[in-house]
Image (cartoon, rainbow, N blue to C red; front, side, top):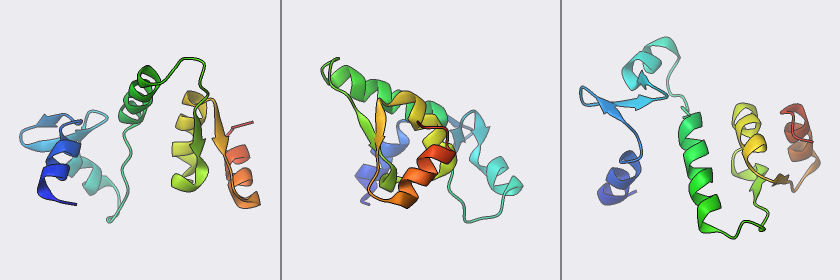
Length: 103
């Protein structure tokens, strides 16, 4: 990822004292609490991106989330409530979606 793209991506997150905030928590505090390396997801960011996508597309268009894009169960729980459904390509993806509460 080039520097310009990284700067653009970080523009979607808040900062405090020169540190990235994720769901209102300083990135350094999160890293101290959990083992690193780790993936950190911001549910409010996921919701905002969905809202932006929804605004850009016709209201009657159904939007589905591809489970293969990120099969993390907590991410699926969030996105399963936002999108009109999920796209699955395997039995394993179907099981993950069902275990995450997506019908």
